[in-house]
Image (cartoon, rainbow, N blue to C red):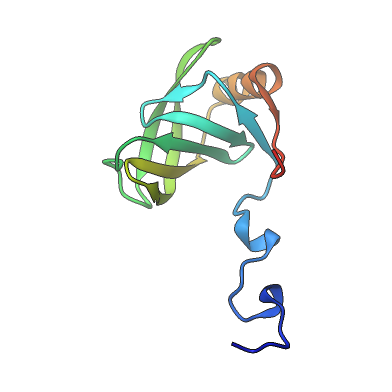
Length: 123
């Protein structure tokens, strides 16, 4: 350990910019479920899903994700970007939206406006 360095200055230490892998802002969601689990938050580029078991899809694989919300059910073309184990029977899955049709994008925008709130790391 080097006492003169703060943790944030040490090589390889996480920083707020490196912790957030998204290029756009997040919105926290409720009442939205996918075929993999509950949606924790959504952004313009994808969603983060909480699953109760290890997903059957591999990182890097294309995945047709079925989304169920109070506004209806629809399918979104995604790619699995990450799978992280968060504890016993808990996994976070990062899905990136790929080549979604204008209708799917419009539905996701409607969900973001009506069923989500801004993300705050301090909540």
